[in-house]
Length: 380
Image 1 (cartoon, one colour):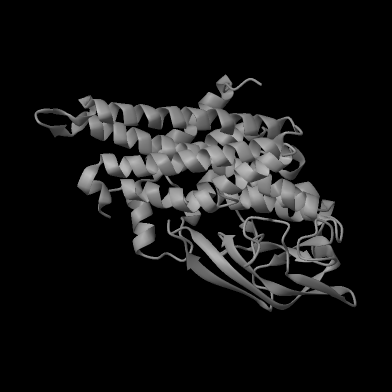
Image 2: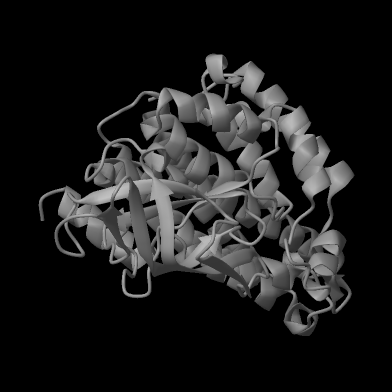
């Protein structure tokens, strides 16, 4: 597997890096957090991303997309991660949009995807439930048939970018027990539909999440994504895909934390010399660099597998997430410690990386979960 970027991908990476440097800073992230902004991101900046075509990178041309593939999207998401940008590209493209693209009807493709790609619609996936832990197939939310409609009742937690979303994709149980792969049906519903309440919550990194309660929400047959009872395979594949995308963001963030720390080691002096000249700190910085590069290889391999529709996507997704969860937490911890006392204060920006590391670590499953899943996929 060739783990190098093409010339076109390098140019895209440079464009994304310049966009982030010009339009966003950690000062903006701080302001969004301190103001407790309901969305937690800039809709204008998100529209600018849409104009650059980033929201359509993986979608087919007939829907208004660019059909460039997952590695192109990876380099964009990595650069957004470097700047800790909270805009809902991952949730709308890799959760909401990808679910519609993979399982949706022709009518859903024509109605929703073009508007999603141009930035008009924010669509997310409400896959997590109070007792589901990291298992996306643990679905207790129920949908029962009532004439020509379905009536949905249940609770979804940690709905990424759920506050302010226009559409919510809701996995429901239409048959079987709560952990069965079969019997899951996916519905796409309007976020303002009667019976659906979305309570804005703040994660430790101040990102947008929502608690969704569904009480007698009525959905029609045209709201079903795919076929009734057969959404489990689609749901599992989408979570793997989003996990790989999140790993690209985590890679960008850990790289930025490393670079900020190295710059501090070069400029902070103690006993008349830069502290980066101390052997113990050199060893720790070298460890951070090695962990970043190992994570990079895992992330690129997982994206290449997605691009090639390989059979190893689930396995490589777990490798990448376990690697990135461990590496990002280690690098964020070390970054704070190497900054000394100032690194422990809220006034210094390095703290934003340790908060993002903690939130990203447990999103779509932590390192322990993915190591265990990898072992199961290998037959152990």
